[in-house]
Amino acid sequence: MTASSWSRRDALRLGGASAAALVAAACGSSASSEGSSGNSTGSTQSNVSALTGADLERAAKGEGGHIVWYNSGNPPLVAAVTKAFTKAYPWATVTGTPETFSDLPAKLISEKVTSAPTADVVWFPPTLRQKLMAYDIFTPVTLAGDKNMPANTLDPQKYAHPVWQLAIGIVYDPKVVTNPPATPQDLADPQWKNQIAFDRVQNLGQATTWLAVWKEPMGATAWDNWLDALQKQNVFLETDANASFTAVLQGQKKLGLSSSDYIISESSGDAVAMDFHMQPVPFYNQQYLTTRAQHPASAKLFMEFASTATGQQAVASVGLSPIMNIPTPNTLSAWLPKGVSMLPGTAEANFTANTSSYLSALSQRWPG
Image (cartoon, rainbow, N blue to C red):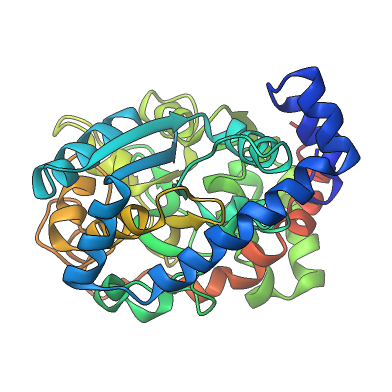
């Protein structure tokens, strides 16, 4: 199911509400009910957006300091950030839930249309943004911590706020591959037939992001032709980017699309490297304040914390790369070879705003 095909009926079917609640939602009664409660919540969030420092902390304490947080499928990250936040704010509590990446949109949409309790803060990659923004699930918020982040990673609309990142690229074993592809087009060379692995494009994950960003520099026609040529390479579709990395590590495939975190975490005896002939493509995770947040001040305080050096250190402690340029083994500015930089976040703007059209083109070639 593509983003454009989501309907109210789909969301209701996926939700776990009672039959009576589903009927009420389908008839629009829940929407009108939410409208009345949403006005007061929205007003509170408007006030919260301007709060900073001690004023924000006082407002969070006044709410009880509780945050409901959905994170896209990373239990160690939830544990590490929760521990660091509650150490900084001992009066606060966090209910952090690592949700399966592919299940997160359905959960949020179902909670929205049925007026069920939902998260205050959600972390997920921008590949899910188009689908979720269509349901008015998130609200813009100004974060003081955004000043700590590179300008090209920021959302001018202030919905999304960067929290961690990875670098996506071609991975290979230098002992096996001595002349890796120098351009995306080189992947269509016959020598790589049956030798490429990447994760299902329907994951809206790393392969989808990497393949999509080349459309603009190539041009639409050349991009389509490139995808057609790449399809003929009999690419092996893996369950996720980790499996693509493992296929190269174990010698099953010569090339894979994967990310920096697997290379950074590999042991000294392993030999998988990333090909830097091409600029690595960033894969971000961003944080959002929900429109129906019951604890908006506490939520904003949590988001601000994630944008500090202490919050970014907590992110790095589980092997992810902070976006802030802080001294950790995972910081990409230190990990990348001298003279190599990632593509700017702005290179993904069209893709994240129109994900469904890119996914349609990719799914035609790799139905999954």
